[in-house]
Image 1 (cartoon, rainbow, N blue to C red):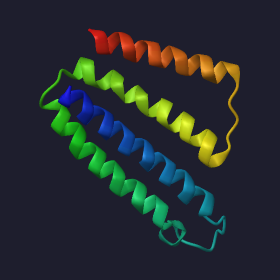
Image 2: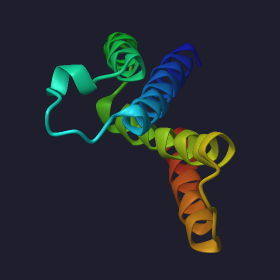
Image 3: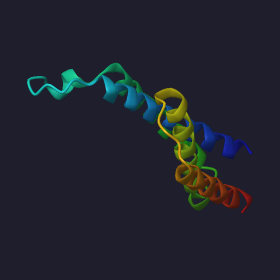
Length: 114
C-alpha cells in the first residue's frame, strides 16, 4: 500500500508540473526578437522543479515494485490532468473523452488487482 502511495504521489506531482507548464505556455509572448530564455516564465521553471521531485519519488517507488506494475499507473496522470484541465482551464469535456478516461481507469484497476 505504501508503494502504491509513492506511485500516486509521483504521478500527481508530475500532473501538477504539466499544469504549471500550461500556465507558463499561456504567458509566453510570440515575439521573434525575444530569446527563448526571456520567454520562459516562472510556471515553466516550477513545472521542471516538480518533474524533478516527481522523478525522485518515482525512483523510490521503483526500488520496491515491479516496473510492469508501476509504469501503467502513470496513466493516472492523464486522469488528473483531464480533470484539472476542465476546472482550471475550462477545457471542454465530451463523451468520447469521458469514455477514454473510463477505459484508462478500468485498465489501472485491473493492473492494481494483479
